[in-house]
Image 1 (cartoon, helix red, strand yellow):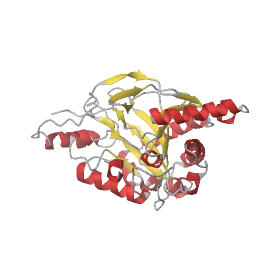
Image 2: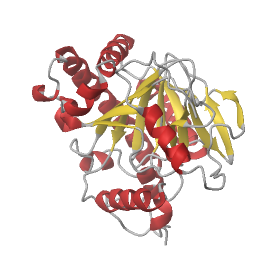
Image 3: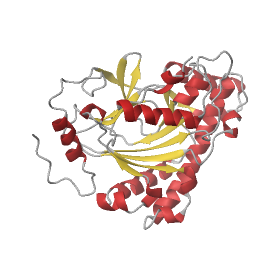
Length: 343
């Protein structure tokens, strides 16, 4: 069918083999297009709303109010925005990118069996039963409570130092932005500080290897995030796309900005005022891609609640939501998300 590139580094997981297996095992089925293939029409590359966070610390009240309004409007209309002057040093982000590249260049067998970073390595999509459900990527998904543990890092001692610093900085930024959004709906800004737990907040290190099937397979399949808020640092290679209305929009990378997006839990808490937008990463046939994401999550047994009643959603905990998402993926191959919790 296809010949695998024999020059592929032994650090890459066996994505080619798994994807070809899915192609062969579903060849007898009718073509299946869920509307989310990378080849589906995409608008031209766009610039997300760009917000200068220095306005939040301005001595001028009008400037502070204007900045908060920008964050509110972007979250309401797009569910995605970019921030500059966010307080995380470029030097720190560059160090993280360098250490992240070293980590992913470790041989695949070592990454998958050594237990590094709390044994959090994953690749592809284990639940995929069709090529359209497969993600051409690998990742480490680390709870914040494990970031500071020396035993998690093995020989990667410099990675621990930079990850600790970056996790702290991203956590501070995420909580600040969540506070602005909570306050904009009439609640005290510390509301989520009371329920967000480091044991359920995560850092995710992503690597998207070069893909010979680009146009047919996603680097990361379309999804929404199962959290309150996500902060993302990505390289300049592009590939991130989001759903705006009924159209996929390609996000133009900005090397000076971090990307922020609303998660399902904040959409539910805000009674759909804020939008948890579906997004994906498109695989690339010419260059690899790196990114790192911070996920702001509540403790498992926290009630998500609502900014006001009546709510369009029934009461649920984070643990219930995660379980429902896992069950949906196992049964259907896809995340159904908040629809399961609507009244």
